[in-house]
Length: 574
Image (tube, rainbow, N blue to C red):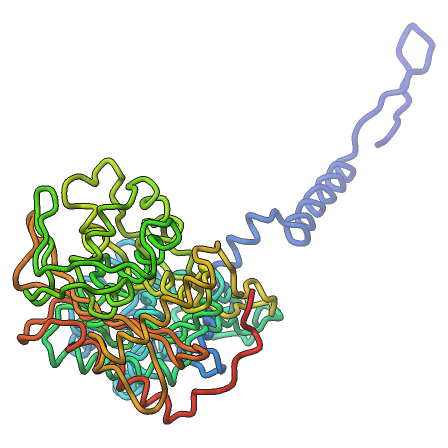
């Protein structure tokens, strides 16, 4: 800026005139533009940075290994393995390369690629989680847009062993059934990420060796199941179910003192590693979701309720004809032969329907209903599995006509195998109804124990004296009654057979039955309680003593070979 002095005519005074120098304007403009450039380059807006970075690199999630599922001895039943997957960048794919991919991959690859290109997509899956052998051919293709990506997949180490308990995952390793579903949030391992850098032009992307720093461990869910017991139970149950052409079957082995499940299996089964032939019938875990009428295996429980309520005495004698008229119906013996006069214990030993029906007629409906709920029937068991059914116990108002007598012989209500074995455990352990559990411990990706399964007493349902009397009667069932085919020389056991007709259109079918056997051993100091149920056999035989007792015996004897008859566990009790 310059100051210029001039003299105006007639005034005689001097005046100052100011003008702006062009150099000064240039300097101001230079500083302004320079400051803007510094701000744009050194301190850019976050949105601008993100947009620019996406043109050159991308942060791609890298899935960490999903958690392990293991048996009670720490043997891994489910782990994760790396399998090759193939994808393509449609923007880099030349027409002749697309034709080559069409020849290799099944499906309409050309249409998929064309649609992806129109949508501006930079990523298109071609095939996911292939076998390493099949991937070798694809790896040899000289297509720059083709990408081989390693993905985690679930490996079920023993194929179909424990299939219904373990469950399975979808293509993205999220649980859809069994433990995989129920414990998905624990088994899921949060991913890290990898930086993918794209060179200028249409050059293939490179991978920067950069990962998110994250300290973690592989999550684990430890089951109470013993894979050795599980294998034995599955083998004999599947053999019996197939030989008798059963529609379904289930088996559970439990520690009656703690409620821990030692084996749980369902038939028909499936291979979680290959589910292409999976049917809805095979998917269902019959051990926890199948409701059925238990028949005579329910009689010890009902007898326990009647004894505790005072509706029957242990020294009573009952007259048992072959057939008994009750209200609007009849109760008949399994074999149409009169049993004559028999005492209370032999109602169980000989499995008399007529004798039990007489107790059912005496019982007070509301109190019986309340007792059934207290024993866990009509309630959903608190076990760490999905799709657990609660069964059906009709309201007392519905107990009309012959229904009270039917309830006494295990008909007119629906139970699940898990409910029945949980209730029977109270007879074995002296009267305590234990909450069943199948998960021993669960740890998350931080190494923290988020769950620990422990014995839990729900309530006392029997006195020790009544429980002891029932155990004696169940021992006599095996020695001299309907359960003789379960008797073995390796140990002394006790149990109860069951044969129930299947209801059909308001009546009981004459050719559809459910055969079962429940028992515990060793009799003097029980360590194991097991239930075997064979649903709707169609090979001619259907009595529980014929179908379910023999495989029960086989299982007990094979377990004995593994020296499972160890001293009493120290964790028994509360």
